[in-house]
Length: 402
Image (cartoon, rainbow, N blue to C red):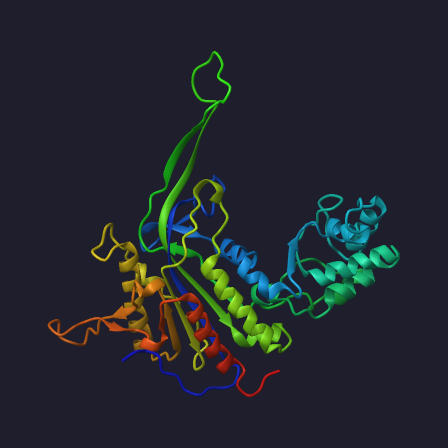
């Protein structure tokens, strides 16, 4: 029986989980300190890895997610002093030294450490409106900036990327920033896993040269170097707590729904930018599963479907075998633990159905069955997003939330 049943639940008590199988061609999407693609040991085998921070940043800065940020996007920076001074100077004008000095003084008086004249010790994550407001305060007067800055920073903000990713800035607030204690932190509504390959990987070395267009007496290349890369099929997992998102956005259910929609579109279409000019590994997912849970808000990762790595050249192919393992794991876990949810599956052209085999049946009669109901298995992404968002709005706005 397709696992697509659901029952009534407490209003707003919704968890949205996104699971993706995405195969990238040769690339170096997320580098370690030595410039090699990030890896990890999982299930006793070396896997390709993309950090959750890398994934979130690529989505947050994507064209798709920009639609949710039209009103007030967040800015993550250590160069807040310079950004405020630039606003104060006005577009096209040179930043004034007295503005930089006054802004730096105000932040230091509030307990913010500074590495140099414009760079803070901490990474601020603020809405653009707050930065613009502080810039206007500097433009009006450089007196008593600390209290004006504290007022701008401490305002409740409805910013989708901050609402999703949260905000935690550690500094010993004092003086004019003393009022910010306990007000700066925003609990993230989003949980994001590190993407791991469904199979074992070995990083490879790309030896490359650049020819000198103006040949001289010496033979050989004008430049010689090497870079590491790999190719991997990833399992990605994201979880969004609708109630926390709604709280972070001040109860604005329309903005919360737009945030979820744009995040889902960004997660599907955005790729990390690491060395993409050299590899162009812009490969969209081959399968996306979304679960809208209303009975249990316990997130479930299906990464253990790949604890035993997919072997080289399986009969179904790497992508097909990865999706088959995902489908079986979803069935086994959700049936075993009795986890109900509305489930939606997308694969371009339904090239890869999400199926399982009922092990309770005899081997002679076993055949693959759908994990998701036929009307919730979609072949086009727009129709998939539309159905997902209908379920989210139906469950998340029950009871007439504002």
